[in-house]
Image 1 (cartoon, rainbow, N blue to C red):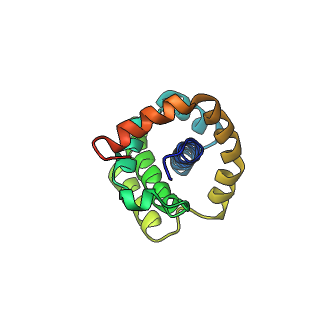
Image 2 (cartoon, helix red, strand yellow; image 1 turned 90 degrees about the horizontal axis):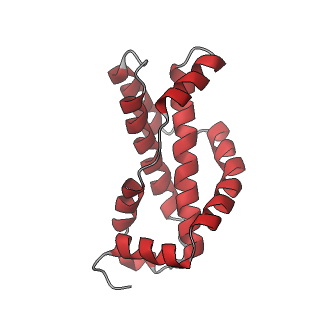
Length: 157
């Protein structure tokens, strides 16, 4: 089942990793140099709102949740994490001059499949095991049950 502890850990870790790598990409794309990128990242201090992730998980049809193979979720999860990162970035970067133009440019890259390239895939693949280890220490059985209750709500599980 998709909402078992191990799967939840992997889902949360993947979402966080894609989100963070996307924020970094957006800042680098609009930044001038390394120092500027670092300063802007520190100034923004963007954090993930878990409600956004839970809302996404609530929309997964329960029949698909029961499948042992939950790999189908990752392309959808990646897209949601990127969109959420773009929204948070645009809201947080006070130095970005033309937000509409930047938004349109990034949306075009995302929709054309140009955004998530081999470099970003490699960064995510390299970072993901560390994030999984970190989340494994945070999400225990009780927390995974609480997440399950939030995500599934009135649905039977």
